[in-house]
Image 1: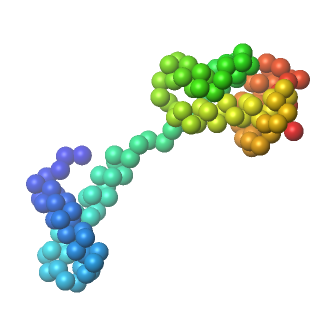
Image 2: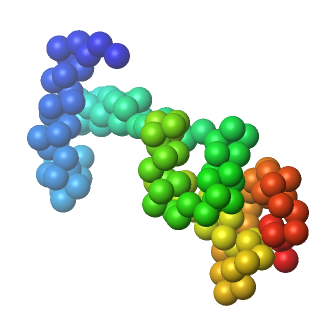
Image 3: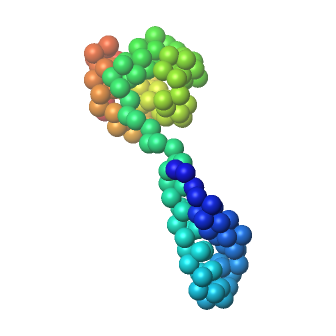
Length: 139
């Protein structure tokens, strides 16, 4: 979005007077200043919306399979996260990938004390059960 000089003046006016207006209200400004303030506020909000990060996409079956196979091979959470990000880049956060690993742990029949994670990814469940249906069971 290209900003004109008039729009930049409005944005600057908004930024300079935001604290004042929050403290004393718009009525203490002249009509022209109120209009300029509102225009600057609107333009600033539009810039924030346009520069907001895009929503992270859902996991693909290839990504889910990567996590499932790595977990089944005995890799720990940190290793899976590291290798996943090397393979697929930063499409998902380390925390998100780690949650998928925790989901795997929560249905792993060899880990009796790790049943506290709510499993929500049915596609991941199907992949894990294809690997070993006796080991990966949703209780």
